[in-house]
Image 1: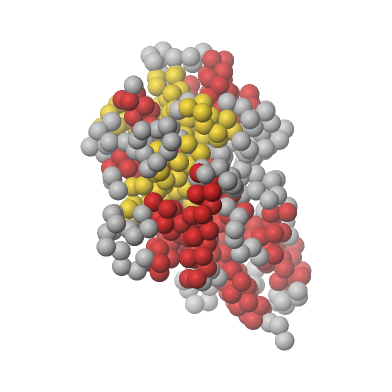
Image 2: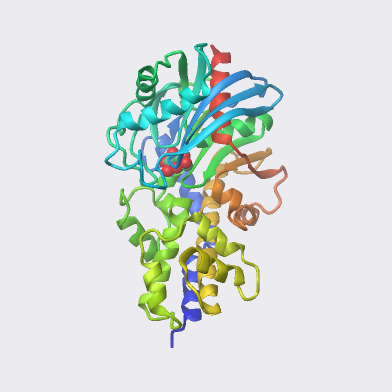
Length: 442
Ligand code: BGC
């Protein structure tokens, strides 16, 4: 007979990424990178950033916009040289108001509304009419033709604002700044958040050659030694979230089919904070439909069938409970969903499903890091630092450790340090560092 426990064991097996799979996925990822570099297959977009790693000696005060999809953050950063970068002022606002009063990321919103909103944040941080060089972190696949010319290829993370796809992001921003009488704010560089994270870590740690975001979205950038027509090694934004040679489950297929862009961003949909809660919901609803929750199925169904019931933070709450009776989860279910009297077996199943989803996420992402290392230094003949930012990596219990364990499985005793490191504020600070290096290079 199928019980809740036998079924969850089965689900854990389906979501497990074995060591063999880790290596196989890494090899496929490396091949996909190389196919894209050779213009054979562009599943991985491998977008040039026109940026090299900084020296750590760049100095100055710079403005930065960090536009990632959930919030827009504007900051002023001080680079003191010697690898020291500090945020001196900042403001952040959600792109979608919790009370429903505005939503700049829905299909009904326009490019002008979105960029006017961003320009208003900039205005709040600019006290006078002096010239302000600005770096713009724009965390979406953008085809870059130069440091400051980048066209949005398509939205990700379920954003749908009209009139931005295929447009030059810098021109949209410059026009909004002009409408706000902010023409003295001078955008100089557009970059991806993964590129910013890499630059921020490289500013103080010269071994950094991989930068990644494990947050609402997922993506990785790395330093490619040989880019035709570019003298120095160049940071490449892989757009790894679109990788698709992966062991999909029926849960992944269901999530993909219901998403804004079916078929796109398959790795991201298996790994990132925007989607882990949705995967959990799909699994829980399947268990409910199979009649496996017997304690209070009607109450659970009422709650769990509401759209987008879990977010990444909920998944983190489930994982954080270390009590034997899972009393923290019980309290959380009551607080969050007014669900009382849950059975311990139900709470265990929620936690185990959440753990299986996040462990899979960490191991899949580790597989892509291994793929990059296989491309740039397969024998690990020098130290490497992988800089990571994002809520999953920072806050999901056990997540960073799971990535490290997966790396250690494939590279058990590297001759040189292979380090993964949280790089907080990488996407914002990286924009300032990018402007500073662009100014220095002129
Ligand atoms: C975007 C990437 C971005 C990542 C992390 C993905 O959805 O395609 O450009 O780096 O999210 O923010």
